[in-house]
Each structure stands twice: as C-alpha cells, then as structure tokens.
Amino acid sequence: MKVLGIDIGGSSLKGAPVDLTTGKLLADATRVETPKKLKPEQMADAVAEIGRRFKWRGAIGCGFPGVVREGVTSFAGNMDQSFLGRNVDELFRASTKRRVHVINDADAAGLAEIHYGAGRDRKGMVMMLTFGTGVGSGFFQNGHLVPNTELGHLPMRGRSAEKWVAASVKDKQKLTYKKWGGRVNQYLELVEMLINPDLFIIGGGISADHAKWTKYVKIKTELVPAALHNDAGIVGAALAFAR
Image (cartoon, rainbow, N blue to C red):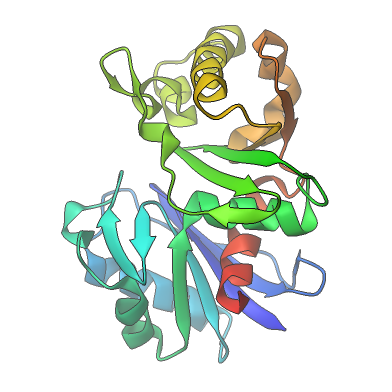
C-alpha cells in the first residue's frame, strides 16, 4: 500500500509518498514553510499543496503537533489555538478531496520507529521523544501505542519543559551541545522517574547530531537515535492511515 505521509511541524510541513511494505519514501520529501502560525483553513491549504506537488490521488496520513481524538484537536501546542475543537480529519479531507487520517505527530514518528526502525521487535515500554520546535512524545507498551501523552509539556523550572529543552531553544539561545545536553539529561531524568521506560528513541532533526550531545546524558535507560531520522514523522503519518 502507498500513502502520502505529511508531518506538520511548528515551522513547516513536509511530506512524501511512502511504501508501507518497506517504510521507505518513494520520492524526496517536499516542504512548505510556515514562518508564522497558520489558521486551520490556511493549514488545510498547505496540506493540499503537498498533495498537488505529487499529483496525489490516494490516501493521506498527517501527523499533527497536538492531541487528536477521533479527528478532533483538544490541545494544539505550538499551533494557532483556533485549532482547538476542530475536526482536522474533515478539514483536510475537504481541502484535499482525498481520504485523510490525522494523528499526533510524535505518535506518528513512534509508529514508524516501532514498525521499521529502532523500536522494531522491542518489548516493554518504549518512549519516542522528538526534539524540534517543541518536544513531542509517543509511548508504546509491547508495540502498542498509548496515544497523546504530550510529555513535552511536563512542568520544569516553572514552565512547560519544551520551553527549556526543545531543539529550537538550543538554536535560539545558541547553546552548546554540552549545555543543551545537560538540560536534556534533566528532562529525561524526570520522564525516567515517571514512566520507567525500557528504551528512549530520540527523533527530530537533532537526532542526526546524536553523538554530539548524548555524551552529556547520564540516565539509566538505554537511549538511541531514531533509525529513520527526520523522516520518521512522514513514514509514521502514512502508516497511521492504514492502522
């Protein structure tokens, strides 16, 4: 089965067709930049634009940075708050004229890693964490998704944890890998204490620099980079449609 996967982030959308048999992209991903927060109808137009670029006629799976239950958003994180209460399944179906299913973006990335990547055949509790504009989390028990955990919003230092440890914060504050790695270590210690996972998988763009900052992380739990790197969100969004 082939599905168009679209990963909606805080600063851009990116998408590509995915072969669900192999988990491979069938073409180079295309990107639509979103330098400002888009309203729901504007985001729907951006999703449709990715479909048009591939002249896509099939199903579409989307990863959305927020809580999505039965297609309806109840928490929108770093997105425009007018998304709250909107049925994004219906919204994106209307804009693309295609079958669409929307899932939390970190849950999508985790699905990809569980099926094709670093979490494949792993038993026990696996936590996918994505570091980008914010921090997303996907939690799996023996390969089964527990959706919409949103552990990037755990309280730390009097505010949401992602305001201190997101990759975007590292870039904005020009933190060294040592400084940022120390922050991530504190965050992971908190998640470790609450969840006691057997494995952390780290995704997002920062996963490509895994060796540069993980040497400053001293937690007990095994920690590995996402095998699909920054494509995990696209692949998992496509996979979510077929589940």
